[in-house]
Amino acid sequence: MNRYGVFLVAGFSSFFVEACNVDECNGDYFFDPLNDLNEGLFERSHHWSNGFPFTNRWEKGAINFSDDGMKIELSDDPKKNEKYTYRSGELRSRHFYGYGCFSIEMKPVSSPGIITSFFLFSGQHDKYEGSNAQHNEIDIEFVGKHTESVQFNFWTNDNDYSSNNAVLIPLGFDASKAFHEYAMRWKKDRIQWFVDGEMRYEVLQSKSNPIPTVSDSRLKIMANVWPVDDKLASWAGKVDILNQPLNGTYRNLSFTPDKGCRGDK
Image (cartoon, rainbow, N blue to C red; front, top):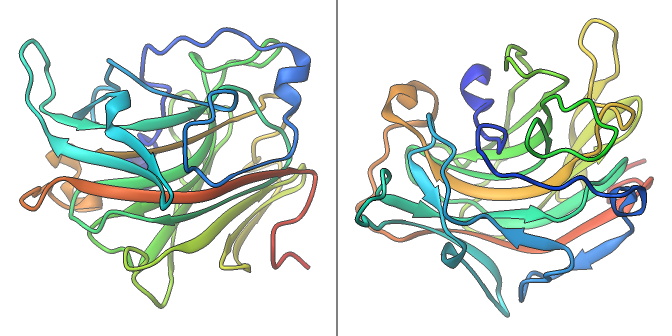
């Protein structure tokens, strides 16, 4: 299952990002209610596709903002000369960030074969000056066939996507029904994941299975919604978009450098 989860990344794309300078990569505190696109912090992927196992293309028009937050819309929208009929959106931070707490409130899509994500990422095509250009990632992701659970995951210097770190955590509620707060605290010696201010999972730094470090790569903040190729239906379920469009909803995104998340003791 973890091998399938690795595809929740931008690293399979041809999206090119210029190297940022040291100040841009440090990352100051911010809070964004996601009522509008803050162009100083974020951009939207547009006119490209990741390829397998994503079965969609990214378009900036699939992300919309309102007083209720940000909606990423997945729809069946065939267009001439486009390989993929499904259209969806991806939000990407313009800068890279180091250790701290990354928090968001979200409602994932509840539909088989659909992934709703909030994650940190760097790789060969999303890198800053001085990084090792390896795939490093920390995830919060929902698999649409069972939104009563959340999946946590990470990869460290893993361009081959060979690690096996995914865990599925029961929530005790259906995450698609109401906003809840999800957070990742990235530290030098551990990663902690929180739900509504309660730590639900922790991984410690180890030589046998190291976690990402700032010395190797700072990470971008990203969110996306995407349909999974039917070949991976055993993990995510088979896509069946009958009552479209489908929307993943986000609000109140924040980053606090070198600080704990709500509920961290």
